[in-house]
Length: 489
Picture 1 (cartoon, helix red, strand yellow):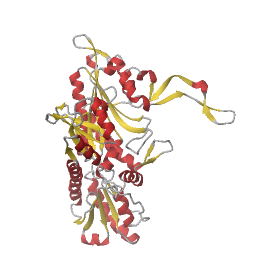
Picture 2: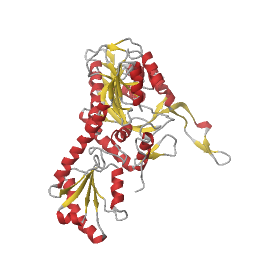
Picture 3: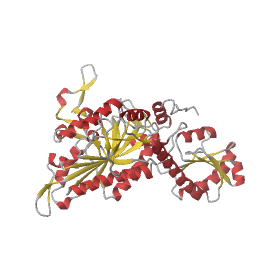
Picture 4: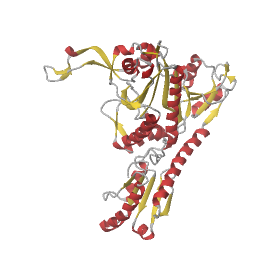
């Protein structure tokens, strides 16, 4: 199978690009900066969607849908929000095309919109304009709404899944009667993201808050989860924002309290995107291809028959039919690859490249012996197992693989997390990659200077670690805790 990947050591960036394309996850489209998500890549996204959607609904949220187009005037109502997104907005100015005298399609200059429309980069403004109609009384609160949608942020330097002009995501937008309730919501949802990343994606994450320079435009506090990729760079995997009353005041969203007073509501927003697929690839995969955790893999088990001729295939297919039923009874997704157009070696390489957690190979001799060859994608180990109770054996194996993938990623993060106390040590360590825990004096000016000099940013300010007196690695000023720096995607 001629799908050789560039090695990670040779060129990590090229390895990633090769893998996304050759594993049939996505490809660049005719629109610069936009991607086509292919069926196998979209199947991974659907698995993520399904799990997250259930988690959101279990925490009381409902799905809704809001317009793709946002009046430009809405953005001017919340100054810091528009400043944060102004350079990334795609703008619709006309609503019609026409043929010119030469028969070419051109924009009809007579069809100019009275007010330009922004293709949503995020939905806070259109949603808070809507919430003004929904909320009058404390009886209408809380509003717990999530939207599955696409957004556009006009990126010029793009990479498949990690940064594209258009991407898929979910965005939660909630309204609350009190500050405490909104803060609780923002913290709860970043916890949901952390649970999803670790328990389903097998990706260990750090939880905490963003520094002012890295905070979401329009937020008072941004909570986040940060993951470490195999090249030592950090990836922001999810964010949850406490918006205070900023958007409620901008869009005049008030409610009547139990005491019959009018108050502005309190807000949050939170989201994860198809960038999670990039995280999944970079956290686990190897030079042979994808390594997918069983809980997210579209196909958990693939069965490859080893046969010569139609008669042998029919014999094997009959035995495989029982195995498939046994696996499906345990809700294990399984594919029987009985194509006679490709040889077993090609199929082995293909499913290895696509990261299927378990591969079973079965031939006439295996049927005689009542066995099947089992290959694990995470370790590339093979063993022969008795077909008796194969469903239970594969079920247990999938649990082991899920845990092993997480533990391997966790060990990598622990081995690449460093405490530093001097500027020289910091510069050297950041250049080599990994999470670098260092003291910072808490000022935006110092944070910006460190970024300018090293390209490292504060990825997360831990909220679950004890305070520790120290001195800022750059200014020498006092600091009450270490923060986590890294170069990032």
